[in-house]
Image (tube, rainbow, N blue to C red):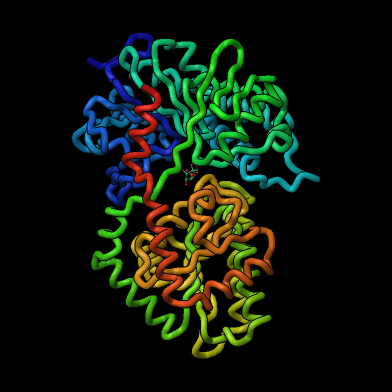
Length: 485
Ligand code: F6P
Protein backbone atom coordinates (compact mmCIF):
# COMPACT_ATOMS: atom_id res chain seq x y z
CA UNK A 1 0.00 0.00 0.00
CA UNK A 2 1.33 3.43 -0.92
CA UNK A 3 0.95 6.20 1.57
CA UNK A 4 -0.53 9.65 1.12
CA UNK A 5 0.64 12.89 2.64
CA UNK A 6 -1.58 12.66 5.72
CA UNK A 7 -1.74 8.93 6.33
CA UNK A 8 0.82 6.54 7.73
CA UNK A 9 3.25 4.87 5.38
CA UNK A 10 5.00 1.53 5.38
CA UNK A 11 8.75 2.28 5.55
CA UNK A 12 10.41 1.12 8.79
CA UNK A 13 13.68 2.93 7.97
CA UNK A 14 14.11 6.16 6.01
CA UNK A 15 17.05 8.24 4.93
CA UNK A 16 16.65 11.86 3.84
CA UNK A 17 19.34 13.84 2.06
CA UNK A 18 19.55 16.57 -0.53
CA UNK A 19 21.62 14.55 -2.99
CA UNK A 20 20.21 11.08 -3.41
CA UNK A 21 21.80 7.75 -4.32
CA UNK A 22 20.83 8.04 -7.99
CA UNK A 23 20.79 10.86 -10.51
CA UNK A 24 19.59 11.22 -14.08
CA UNK A 25 20.83 12.83 -17.25
CA UNK A 26 19.14 13.17 -20.61
CA UNK A 27 20.63 10.97 -23.34
CA UNK A 28 20.97 12.19 -26.94
CA UNK A 29 17.79 10.38 -27.96
CA UNK A 30 15.91 12.13 -25.14
CA UNK A 31 15.63 9.13 -22.83
CA UNK A 32 16.79 9.25 -19.22
CA UNK A 33 20.15 7.78 -18.20
CA UNK A 34 20.52 6.64 -14.60
CA UNK A 35 23.73 7.00 -12.57
CA UNK A 36 24.19 5.44 -9.18
CA UNK A 37 26.17 7.34 -6.60
CA UNK A 38 28.63 5.98 -4.05
CA UNK A 39 29.58 7.02 -0.56
CA UNK A 40 28.99 5.93 3.01
CA UNK A 41 25.23 6.33 3.06
CA UNK A 42 24.71 4.25 -0.06
CA UNK A 43 26.71 1.29 1.23
CA UNK A 44 25.29 1.79 4.71
CA UNK A 45 21.67 1.64 3.67
CA UNK A 46 22.36 -1.30 1.34
CA UNK A 47 23.85 -3.13 4.33
CA UNK A 48 20.54 -3.22 6.19
CA UNK A 49 18.99 -4.85 3.13
CA UNK A 50 15.43 -3.88 4.08
CA UNK A 51 13.28 -3.87 0.95
CA UNK A 52 10.80 -1.50 2.58
CA UNK A 53 13.37 1.19 3.41
CA UNK A 54 12.90 4.45 1.53
CA UNK A 55 15.43 7.15 0.63
CA UNK A 56 13.94 10.62 0.21
CA UNK A 57 16.05 13.11 -1.78
CA UNK A 58 15.62 16.16 -4.00
CA UNK A 59 15.51 16.23 -7.78
CA UNK A 60 18.66 18.24 -8.53
CA UNK A 61 18.28 19.06 -12.20
CA UNK A 62 15.88 18.92 -15.13
CA UNK A 63 16.48 15.23 -15.87
CA UNK A 64 15.91 14.30 -12.22
CA UNK A 65 12.69 16.32 -12.28
CA UNK A 66 11.49 14.47 -15.38
CA UNK A 67 12.23 11.14 -13.71
CA UNK A 68 10.47 12.24 -10.51
CA UNK A 69 7.39 13.40 -12.40
CA UNK A 70 7.19 10.15 -14.35
CA UNK A 71 7.07 8.15 -11.11
CA UNK A 72 3.96 7.89 -8.95
CA UNK A 73 4.38 10.19 -5.91
CA UNK A 74 7.92 10.83 -7.17
CA UNK A 75 8.78 7.36 -5.88
CA UNK A 76 11.03 5.72 -8.44
CA UNK A 77 10.20 2.13 -9.26
CA UNK A 78 12.32 -0.50 -7.61
CA UNK A 79 13.21 -2.39 -10.76
CA UNK A 80 15.21 0.27 -12.49
CA UNK A 81 15.88 2.95 -9.99
CA UNK A 82 16.45 1.45 -6.61
CA UNK A 83 19.66 1.29 -4.67
CA UNK A 84 20.46 -2.02 -3.04
CA UNK A 85 16.78 -2.93 -2.98
CA UNK A 86 15.51 0.29 -1.42
CA UNK A 87 13.04 2.61 -3.07
CA UNK A 88 14.02 6.20 -3.80
CA UNK A 89 11.52 9.02 -3.56
CA UNK A 90 12.78 12.06 -5.42
CA UNK A 91 11.05 15.31 -4.52
CA UNK A 92 10.17 17.53 -7.43
CA UNK A 93 10.76 20.86 -5.67
CA UNK A 94 10.26 23.83 -7.99
CA UNK A 95 13.61 24.96 -9.44
CA UNK A 96 13.54 28.47 -7.96
CA UNK A 97 12.78 27.26 -4.43
CA UNK A 98 15.42 24.57 -4.77
CA UNK A 99 18.10 27.00 -6.00
CA UNK A 100 17.39 29.46 -3.18
CA UNK A 101 17.48 26.75 -0.54
CA UNK A 102 20.51 24.87 -1.92
CA UNK A 103 22.70 27.65 -3.31
CA UNK A 104 21.51 30.54 -1.17
CA UNK A 105 21.07 29.12 2.32
CA UNK A 106 22.74 25.68 2.41
CA UNK A 107 25.87 26.32 0.34
CA UNK A 108 26.37 30.10 0.53
CA UNK A 109 25.37 30.53 4.16
CA UNK A 110 25.42 27.44 6.39
CA UNK A 111 28.39 25.87 4.57
CA UNK A 112 30.27 29.17 4.87
CA UNK A 113 29.47 29.47 8.57
CA UNK A 114 30.55 25.93 9.45
CA UNK A 115 33.77 26.15 7.42
CA UNK A 116 34.65 29.71 8.55
CA UNK A 117 34.76 30.92 4.95
CA UNK A 118 33.47 34.49 5.17
CA UNK A 119 35.70 37.50 4.60
CA UNK A 120 33.76 39.36 7.27
CA UNK A 121 34.38 43.04 6.36
CA UNK A 122 31.95 42.56 3.46
CA UNK A 123 30.21 39.23 3.90
CA UNK A 124 27.80 38.02 5.04
CA UNK A 125 25.13 40.72 4.70
CA UNK A 126 21.73 39.32 5.61
CA UNK A 127 19.44 41.45 3.45
CA UNK A 128 16.04 41.12 1.79
CA UNK A 129 17.49 38.69 -0.76
CA UNK A 130 18.59 36.40 2.03
CA UNK A 131 15.12 36.52 3.58
CA UNK A 132 13.63 35.24 0.30
CA UNK A 133 16.20 32.45 0.30
CA UNK A 134 15.45 31.62 3.91
CA UNK A 135 11.74 31.27 3.11
CA UNK A 136 12.66 28.88 0.31
CA UNK A 137 14.88 26.89 2.66
CA UNK A 138 11.96 26.59 5.06
CA UNK A 139 9.66 25.41 2.26
CA UNK A 140 12.29 22.94 1.03
CA UNK A 141 12.65 21.48 4.53
CA UNK A 142 8.84 21.33 4.88
CA UNK A 143 8.61 19.37 1.61
CA UNK A 144 11.03 16.79 3.01
CA UNK A 145 9.21 16.59 6.34
CA UNK A 146 5.90 16.08 4.56
CA UNK A 147 7.26 13.30 2.34
CA UNK A 148 8.92 11.56 5.29
CA UNK A 149 5.75 11.80 7.37
CA UNK A 150 3.81 10.21 4.53
CA UNK A 151 6.26 7.35 3.91
CA UNK A 152 7.14 6.39 7.49
CA UNK A 153 5.55 3.38 9.20
CA UNK A 154 4.45 3.84 12.83
CA UNK A 155 7.53 4.14 15.04
CA UNK A 156 9.91 4.14 12.05
CA UNK A 157 13.53 5.31 12.28
CA UNK A 158 14.32 8.34 10.11
CA UNK A 159 17.91 9.43 9.44
CA UNK A 160 18.02 13.04 8.22
CA UNK A 161 21.33 14.14 6.71
CA UNK A 162 23.24 17.37 6.83
CA UNK A 163 22.94 21.15 6.75
CA UNK A 164 20.47 21.21 3.87
CA UNK A 165 17.92 19.66 6.21
CA UNK A 166 18.41 21.30 9.58
CA UNK A 167 14.75 22.30 9.98
CA UNK A 168 13.27 18.97 8.90
CA UNK A 169 13.68 17.05 12.20
CA UNK A 170 11.53 19.48 14.22
CA UNK A 171 8.95 19.78 11.42
CA UNK A 172 8.76 16.00 11.17
CA UNK A 173 8.44 15.55 14.94
CA UNK A 174 5.49 17.98 14.97
CA UNK A 175 3.74 15.93 12.29
CA UNK A 176 4.75 12.46 13.52
CA UNK A 177 5.69 12.35 17.22
CA UNK A 178 5.74 8.53 17.04
CA UNK A 179 8.93 8.43 14.92
CA UNK A 180 12.52 7.94 16.06
CA UNK A 181 14.36 10.80 14.37
CA UNK A 182 18.10 11.15 13.87
CA UNK A 183 20.03 13.98 12.27
CA UNK A 184 23.62 13.68 11.08
CA UNK A 185 25.99 16.56 10.23
CA UNK A 186 28.67 15.70 7.68
CA UNK A 187 30.25 19.15 8.07
CA UNK A 188 32.20 20.68 10.92
CA UNK A 189 30.13 22.76 13.34
CA UNK A 190 30.95 26.44 13.81
CA UNK A 191 32.08 27.80 17.18
CA UNK A 192 29.36 29.94 18.83
CA UNK A 193 30.96 33.32 18.16
CA UNK A 194 31.08 32.51 14.44
CA UNK A 195 27.69 30.78 14.33
CA UNK A 196 26.19 33.99 15.73
CA UNK A 197 26.97 35.79 12.49
CA UNK A 198 23.60 34.33 11.46
CA UNK A 199 20.51 36.44 12.21
CA UNK A 200 19.23 35.45 15.66
CA UNK A 201 16.00 33.88 14.43
CA UNK A 202 17.88 31.87 11.79
CA UNK A 203 20.46 30.64 14.30
CA UNK A 204 17.64 29.63 16.66
CA UNK A 205 15.68 27.88 13.92
CA UNK A 206 18.69 25.85 12.76
CA UNK A 207 19.47 24.68 16.30
CA UNK A 208 15.89 23.95 17.38
CA UNK A 209 15.33 22.26 14.02
CA UNK A 210 18.11 19.76 14.73
CA UNK A 211 17.06 19.46 18.38
CA UNK A 212 13.76 18.14 17.01
CA UNK A 213 15.72 14.91 16.53
CA UNK A 214 16.15 12.31 19.27
CA UNK A 215 19.81 12.05 18.32
CA UNK A 216 22.10 14.44 16.51
CA UNK A 217 25.21 12.78 15.07
CA UNK A 218 28.57 14.33 14.23
CA UNK A 219 31.79 13.05 12.70
CA UNK A 220 33.98 14.06 15.66
CA UNK A 221 33.58 15.01 19.30
CA UNK A 222 34.91 18.46 18.45
CA UNK A 223 31.97 19.20 16.12
CA UNK A 224 29.45 17.70 18.59
CA UNK A 225 30.77 19.93 21.37
CA UNK A 226 30.69 23.00 19.11
CA UNK A 227 27.02 22.27 18.40
CA UNK A 228 26.34 21.94 22.13
CA UNK A 229 28.13 25.26 22.80
CA UNK A 230 25.98 26.95 20.14
CA UNK A 231 22.84 25.57 21.80
CA UNK A 232 24.01 26.95 25.14
CA UNK A 233 24.98 30.37 23.74
CA UNK A 234 22.04 30.93 21.39
CA UNK A 235 19.18 29.08 23.09
CA UNK A 236 20.34 29.03 26.70
CA UNK A 237 20.01 25.24 26.49
CA UNK A 238 21.32 23.04 29.27
CA UNK A 239 24.33 21.10 28.09
CA UNK A 240 26.02 18.03 29.57
CA UNK A 241 29.48 18.00 27.98
CA UNK A 242 30.41 14.59 29.39
CA UNK A 243 27.24 12.72 28.52
CA UNK A 244 26.83 14.77 25.31
CA UNK A 245 23.23 15.79 25.78
CA UNK A 246 21.39 19.04 25.10
CA UNK A 247 18.16 19.84 26.93
CA UNK A 248 15.95 22.59 25.61
CA UNK A 249 12.24 23.38 26.01
CA UNK A 250 11.69 20.24 28.07
CA UNK A 251 13.24 17.77 25.62
CA UNK A 252 16.67 16.15 25.65
CA UNK A 253 18.56 15.38 22.46
CA UNK A 254 21.52 13.03 22.68
CA UNK A 255 24.58 13.84 20.61
CA UNK A 256 26.46 10.99 18.97
CA UNK A 257 29.95 10.76 17.51
CA UNK A 258 30.39 8.43 14.54
CA UNK A 259 33.66 8.87 12.66
CA UNK A 260 32.89 7.54 9.21
CA UNK A 261 35.78 5.38 7.97
CA UNK A 262 37.03 4.22 4.61
CA UNK A 263 35.60 1.09 2.97
CA UNK A 264 38.75 -1.06 2.78
CA UNK A 265 37.27 -4.05 0.93
CA UNK A 266 35.69 -1.92 -1.74
CA UNK A 267 38.72 0.34 -2.20
CA UNK A 268 41.33 -2.43 -2.38
CA UNK A 269 39.32 -4.37 -4.95
CA UNK A 270 38.43 -1.28 -6.99
CA UNK A 271 42.00 0.05 -6.97
CA UNK A 272 43.32 -3.02 -8.81
CA UNK A 273 40.90 -3.18 -11.70
CA UNK A 274 42.21 -2.73 -15.26
CA UNK A 275 40.92 0.84 -15.65
CA UNK A 276 42.97 1.89 -12.61
CA UNK A 277 46.06 -0.02 -13.80
CA UNK A 278 45.82 1.76 -17.14
CA UNK A 279 45.72 5.19 -15.49
CA UNK A 280 48.49 4.22 -13.11
CA UNK A 281 50.74 3.41 -16.06
CA UNK A 282 50.02 6.83 -17.59
CA UNK A 283 50.75 8.63 -14.30
CA UNK A 284 53.98 6.64 -13.83
CA UNK A 285 55.08 7.72 -17.25
CA UNK A 286 54.43 11.39 -16.45
CA UNK A 287 56.21 11.21 -13.09
CA UNK A 288 59.17 9.12 -14.25
CA UNK A 289 61.70 8.45 -11.49
CA UNK A 290 60.64 11.58 -9.58
CA UNK A 291 58.63 11.71 -6.35
CA UNK A 292 54.88 12.38 -6.48
CA UNK A 293 52.92 14.72 -4.23
CA UNK A 294 49.21 14.03 -4.74
CA UNK A 295 46.02 15.87 -3.81
CA UNK A 296 42.44 15.00 -4.76
CA UNK A 297 39.60 17.41 -3.99
CA UNK A 298 36.43 18.97 -5.22
CA UNK A 299 37.32 22.54 -6.22
CA UNK A 300 35.92 23.65 -2.92
CA UNK A 301 36.77 26.82 -1.01
CA UNK A 302 37.33 24.89 2.21
CA UNK A 303 39.84 22.48 0.62
CA UNK A 304 42.54 25.18 0.55
CA UNK A 305 43.96 24.25 -2.84
CA UNK A 306 45.48 27.69 -3.41
CA UNK A 307 47.56 27.62 -0.21
CA UNK A 308 48.55 24.06 -1.06
CA UNK A 309 49.95 25.25 -4.41
CA UNK A 310 51.65 28.18 -2.68
CA UNK A 311 53.31 25.72 -0.30
CA UNK A 312 54.53 23.61 -3.23
CA UNK A 313 55.86 26.74 -4.95
CA UNK A 314 57.63 27.74 -1.73
CA UNK A 315 59.22 24.28 -1.60
CA UNK A 316 60.59 24.61 -5.14
CA UNK A 317 61.80 28.17 -4.47
CA UNK A 318 63.51 27.53 -1.14
CA UNK A 319 64.74 23.99 -1.70
CA UNK A 320 65.85 23.99 -5.32
CA UNK A 321 67.20 20.46 -4.90
CA UNK A 322 63.60 19.34 -5.46
CA UNK A 323 63.43 20.91 -8.91
CA UNK A 324 63.02 18.20 -11.53
CA UNK A 325 62.86 15.62 -8.72
CA UNK A 326 59.18 15.96 -7.80
CA UNK A 327 55.82 16.26 -9.56
CA UNK A 328 52.67 17.59 -7.92
CA UNK A 329 49.61 15.76 -9.26
CA UNK A 330 46.52 17.73 -8.31
CA UNK A 331 42.97 16.66 -9.12
CA UNK A 332 40.52 19.46 -8.50
CA UNK A 333 37.20 18.62 -10.03
CA UNK A 334 34.26 21.01 -10.47
CA UNK A 335 31.83 21.65 -7.66
CA UNK A 336 28.93 24.06 -7.04
CA UNK A 337 29.67 26.00 -10.20
CA UNK A 338 26.42 27.96 -9.82
CA UNK A 339 28.18 30.03 -7.15
CA UNK A 340 30.43 32.93 -8.23
CA UNK A 341 32.83 32.30 -5.32
CA UNK A 342 33.47 28.77 -6.60
CA UNK A 343 33.97 29.93 -10.20
CA UNK A 344 36.45 32.62 -9.07
CA UNK A 345 38.26 30.11 -6.89
CA UNK A 346 38.51 27.62 -9.77
CA UNK A 347 40.02 30.34 -11.95
CA UNK A 348 42.58 31.19 -9.23
CA UNK A 349 43.53 27.49 -8.87
CA UNK A 350 44.14 27.19 -12.62
CA UNK A 351 46.04 30.47 -12.80
CA UNK A 352 48.37 29.53 -9.97
CA UNK A 353 49.04 26.09 -11.46
CA UNK A 354 50.02 27.77 -14.72
CA UNK A 355 52.23 30.29 -12.89
CA UNK A 356 54.10 27.49 -11.13
CA UNK A 357 54.65 25.60 -14.37
CA UNK A 358 55.89 28.78 -16.06
CA UNK A 359 58.24 29.62 -13.20
CA UNK A 360 59.90 26.19 -12.90
CA UNK A 361 58.89 23.99 -15.85
CA UNK A 362 61.45 22.74 -18.38
CA UNK A 363 61.13 20.88 -21.68
CA UNK A 364 61.29 17.58 -19.85
CA UNK A 365 59.60 18.40 -16.50
CA UNK A 366 56.12 19.66 -15.74
CA UNK A 367 56.22 20.48 -12.01
CA UNK A 368 52.44 20.56 -11.49
CA UNK A 369 49.90 18.43 -13.33
CA UNK A 370 46.37 19.70 -12.72
CA UNK A 371 43.34 17.66 -13.78
CA UNK A 372 39.94 19.29 -13.41
CA UNK A 373 37.63 16.47 -14.52
CA UNK A 374 36.29 13.95 -12.04
CA UNK A 375 37.68 10.48 -12.68
CA UNK A 376 37.52 8.09 -9.72
CA UNK A 377 39.77 5.36 -11.21
CA UNK A 378 42.43 7.99 -11.89
CA UNK A 379 42.18 9.23 -8.29
CA UNK A 380 42.73 5.67 -7.07
CA UNK A 381 45.75 5.34 -9.37
CA UNK A 382 47.19 8.54 -7.90
CA UNK A 383 46.57 7.25 -4.36
CA UNK A 384 48.55 4.10 -5.21
CA UNK A 385 51.43 6.07 -6.68
CA UNK A 386 51.71 8.93 -4.16
CA UNK A 387 54.85 9.44 -2.06
CA UNK A 388 53.16 12.28 -0.22
CA UNK A 389 49.43 13.05 0.00
CA UNK A 390 48.50 16.65 0.73
CA UNK A 391 45.20 17.10 2.59
CA UNK A 392 45.20 20.65 3.94
CA UNK A 393 41.58 21.86 4.31
CA UNK A 394 40.82 25.08 6.16
CA UNK A 395 38.20 22.98 7.93
CA UNK A 396 36.56 19.71 7.01
CA UNK A 397 33.90 17.54 8.64
CA UNK A 398 36.07 14.42 8.14
CA UNK A 399 37.92 14.23 4.80
CA UNK A 400 37.83 10.78 3.30
CA UNK A 401 40.79 11.28 0.95
CA UNK A 402 43.04 11.27 4.03
CA UNK A 403 41.53 7.90 4.97
CA UNK A 404 41.48 6.36 1.49
CA UNK A 405 45.11 7.03 0.51
CA UNK A 406 46.74 4.87 3.22
CA UNK A 407 44.34 2.02 2.43
CA UNK A 408 45.34 1.71 -1.25
CA UNK A 409 48.90 3.08 -1.22
CA UNK A 410 51.31 0.67 -2.94
CA UNK A 411 54.55 1.52 -1.16
CA UNK A 412 53.47 3.66 1.78
CA UNK A 413 52.66 7.33 1.57
CA UNK A 414 53.42 10.21 3.93
CA UNK A 415 50.23 12.09 4.84
CA UNK A 416 50.40 15.87 5.27
CA UNK A 417 47.16 16.58 7.10
CA UNK A 418 45.48 19.76 8.28
CA UNK A 419 44.80 19.79 12.01
CA UNK A 420 41.40 21.32 11.13
CA UNK A 421 40.15 18.19 9.32
CA UNK A 422 37.89 15.89 11.32
CA UNK A 423 40.09 12.99 10.18
CA UNK A 424 42.94 14.52 12.18
CA UNK A 425 41.30 13.33 15.40
CA UNK A 426 41.89 9.74 14.29
CA UNK A 427 44.99 10.05 12.07
CA UNK A 428 46.90 12.89 13.70
CA UNK A 429 49.50 10.70 15.37
CA UNK A 430 50.93 9.22 12.19
CA UNK A 431 50.30 12.14 9.87
CA UNK A 432 52.44 15.26 9.42
CA UNK A 433 50.11 17.83 10.99
CA UNK A 434 49.83 21.34 9.59
CA UNK A 435 48.11 24.61 10.34
CA UNK A 436 46.34 25.02 6.97
CA UNK A 437 46.89 28.79 6.87
CA UNK A 438 50.66 28.47 7.32
CA UNK A 439 52.09 28.13 3.82
CA UNK A 440 55.69 27.82 5.01
CA UNK A 441 54.86 25.16 7.60
CA UNK A 442 52.94 23.27 4.90
CA UNK A 443 55.96 23.50 2.61
CA UNK A 444 58.18 22.17 5.44
CA UNK A 445 55.77 19.28 5.96
CA UNK A 446 55.93 18.44 2.25
CA UNK A 447 59.71 18.35 2.53
CA UNK A 448 59.50 16.14 5.63
CA UNK A 449 57.16 13.78 3.78
CA UNK A 450 59.40 13.65 0.72
CA UNK A 451 62.45 12.84 2.80
CA UNK A 452 60.80 10.36 5.19
CA UNK A 453 62.64 7.02 5.25
CA UNK A 454 60.86 4.29 3.30
CA UNK A 455 60.38 1.96 6.27
CA UNK A 456 59.01 4.72 8.49
CA UNK A 457 56.63 5.71 5.73
CA UNK A 458 55.44 2.13 5.34
CA UNK A 459 54.97 1.70 9.11
CA UNK A 460 53.02 4.92 9.44
CA UNK A 461 50.87 4.03 6.44
CA UNK A 462 49.96 0.69 8.00
CA UNK A 463 48.84 2.38 11.22
CA UNK A 464 47.00 5.09 9.29
CA UNK A 465 45.15 2.45 7.27
CA UNK A 466 44.09 0.64 10.44
CA UNK A 467 42.79 3.85 12.02
CA UNK A 468 41.13 4.92 8.77
CA UNK A 469 39.10 1.73 8.47
CA UNK A 470 38.08 1.36 12.12
CA UNK A 471 34.47 2.25 11.34
CA UNK A 472 33.55 1.14 7.81
CA UNK A 473 30.48 2.76 6.21
CA UNK A 474 28.17 -0.20 6.79
CA UNK A 475 28.98 -0.27 10.50
CA UNK A 476 28.85 3.53 10.71
CA UNK A 477 25.30 3.42 9.42
CA UNK A 478 24.19 0.48 11.57
CA UNK A 479 25.65 2.13 14.70
CA UNK A 480 23.55 5.21 14.11
CA UNK A 481 20.46 3.16 13.50
CA UNK A 482 21.04 1.05 16.63
CA UNK A 483 21.65 4.12 18.77
CA UNK A 484 18.47 5.71 17.46
CA UNK A 485 16.35 2.68 18.14
O1 F6P B 1 28.60 17.14 3.96
C1 F6P B 1 29.20 17.63 2.86
C2 F6P B 1 28.58 17.18 1.57
O2 F6P B 1 27.19 17.21 1.55
C3 F6P B 1 29.11 15.79 1.26
O3 F6P B 1 28.16 14.81 1.39
C4 F6P B 1 29.70 15.93 -0.10
O4 F6P B 1 31.07 15.67 -0.03
C5 F6P B 1 29.58 17.36 -0.50
O5 F6P B 1 29.02 18.05 0.57
C6 F6P B 1 28.84 17.45 -1.80
O6 F6P B 1 28.26 18.64 -1.99
P1 F6P B 1 27.21 18.88 -3.13
O7 F6P B 1 26.11 17.89 -2.93
O8 F6P B 1 26.79 20.29 -2.95
O9 F6P B 1 27.94 18.64 -4.41
